[in-house]
Image (tube, rainbow over all chains, first blue to last red; front, side, top):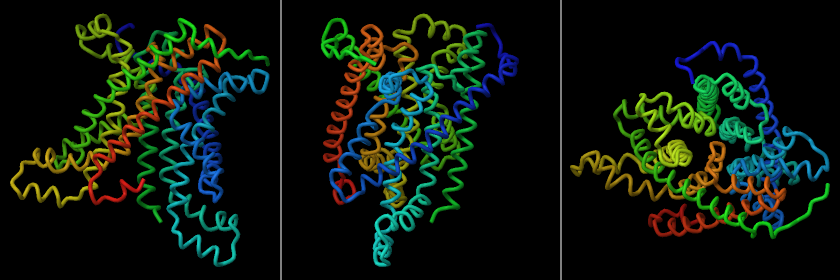
Length: 219
Length: 240
């Protein structure tokens, strides 16, 4: 590695880095959306009055929470093309892995949020003659989600950082693009420091925003 | 797509040995990193609860820094960038003479990263005790160090056993990232087996089962610890 910190190499490669960052954002947003959707379904299953359903959902959550994300990424990298019977490319395999993995974590957050809604609210809804579905839809979930927003956003920041693990299957995200430039131009110091700095600033601003929200938004 | 299942491959040499050695590296990395995480994390966590502004600032900066950079990026910084930033002699030593360079780097990286999580738990534990205990200790004539040593920390550690368990499990899972710098831990070994034998599902199943087993053993052990160290009168701990 030649001496000195070369800002030029960073400036020159901004388009490549931005392309990678778009992939990182896309993956993060899709995984958050899918994760919250899956997590809500799982949480409702866990809290459902049917014992077998909550058992299945509980096992799913515990199983995925004891797996390293990298192993899950590898699994689906091989499994998805095998099940579909044709190659689908890294992106979809990774996306499915992220959604299924994050759903387990979102489930626990959402379950805690639903449990945090007072029992009186549920009882009041039932007394008004609402069905289970209506009760969940109009009474419990709106309050639960409002309580959960700070934790959901914190998890989103964690997920944003976790997307860097697509490195192991070489999907061109922010880190991988920076890595390619770093190795091509032999500028490991500059590129890795830049990557760390960008992630740090984005996540710090995000978590400070969450903290501010937490103070002003609590029910 | 056709797939020929062949579970026997896992028991064949050298693949069986690879799995065992991978498991060994995973456990070794995680336990060594936990030693750093627990001791450093306790110090940082305590710093954040003192009333000395400089110490608080350092503690906060540490936690924010390590929590807001992805672990994989931190690993690359430690492995590729850190030796360059050292003075020449030290840099040379790290690059040439450091024993087990990949393993040591992974341990330091995982340890310092997890320390930021442990620090938050320790801080939360100490803050949950309430100021009265601290004042009582000081009024008895204990020095601030003694207050932490004999009054606050013993209770705080016992309160935070459950969240510490999940951080401890997190280290096992995160140790899989070490494969990116060439530590042949469990995930790396099973990936290697899948490449050699074209039996990815059997290999990954082995890793999956072993990770589940690690989780199960740690959870069981920590539940015993939790029960032994439960503070009498605190129902919330026993209710679980």
